[in-house]
Amino acid sequence: MKIYTKTGDTGETSLYGGQRVAKGNPRLEAYGTVDETDTALGLALIQPGAAAYAELIKKVQVDLMVVGSELATPQGQAISGLELISEQR
Image (tube, rainbow, N blue to C red; front, side, top):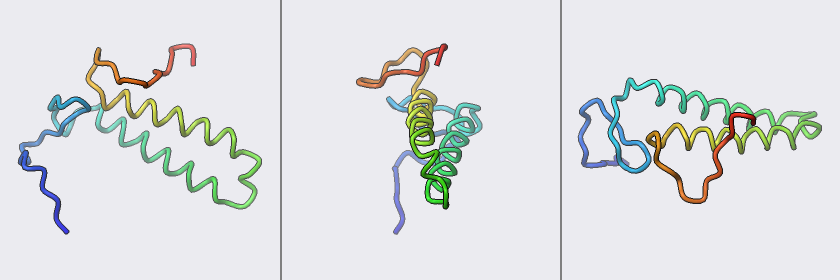
């Protein structure tokens, strides 16, 4: 099945809220890397012996989802209901 967004491929993609950025934008690479890391941690959870680390891995995954959300959101724009990662954290 093909999916069409009807926005055309002009070398741009949308951030949360609709702002368009170039597909080469470093934030897209960053949140792709964050997503891949989250996936790798999910695979780690199903490995033998992972139960000892499950709580820590799940906390890191939650933080990665927040970081990915922040990266997908234009700077200065808030995400309703999302608690951002603090500098201290």
